[in-house]
Image (cartoon, rainbow, N blue to C red; front, side, top):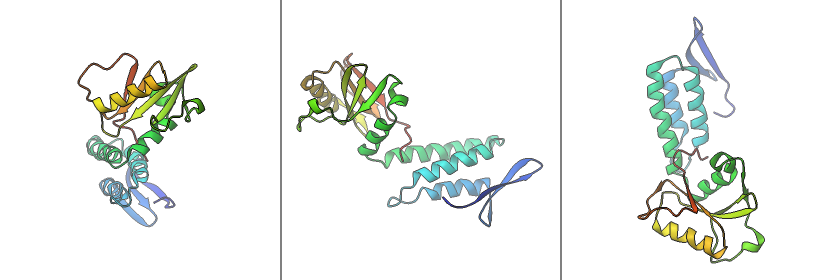
Amino acid sequence: MKNNLIKILYDKNIPIYIKIENEIIDKYEALSLAISLRGNNKNNNYRDAIIFMEFIRNVFNYDYTFQNISNIVYRYLLKDSVENNNELSIQEYFNNNINKVLGQEYSYIKQPKDFIMKEHLPDSWVKYKEDIFPVEIKKYDFDNKALKQLLRYINVYKSKKGIAVGKKLTITEKLPSNITFISCEGWILF
């Protein structure tokens, strides 16, 4: 798919087909192709599938019914990409998109030299002005165990606050005021 030539075929200025190499497909066959690009569990190629999906949604944006169907497929691909990634993928996304996730005033920093204790290593570090905060990231729910872990990092490193990342916040008590929760649900991970 990466090196294939894609051409849009029109009828009276309305896109009708997509031509990929020498094969002509309609919009519904294109949806099927987007799903097949995802691959199987051994070959998770979500990036190509999602990029192609965005392309065909833009090409056929005039068709309301198609948009509704393609939205379902698109959400499936996005959800599936998160489900099949591991915690390291979420950490990588967080670190590479810190400004998008938290705001322009935040920055990712590598493990600070004066903050190294092997038994107390958070998943990431964030800098805000002159303050450095630990980040604890969970693939699924951010629960009481994860909260306890993050609170330990905050205490050990004498940080003012911490960042909690997970699909959902499921702690049984109120989230402490010095902790910010960020949901990773809907992040597009490649």
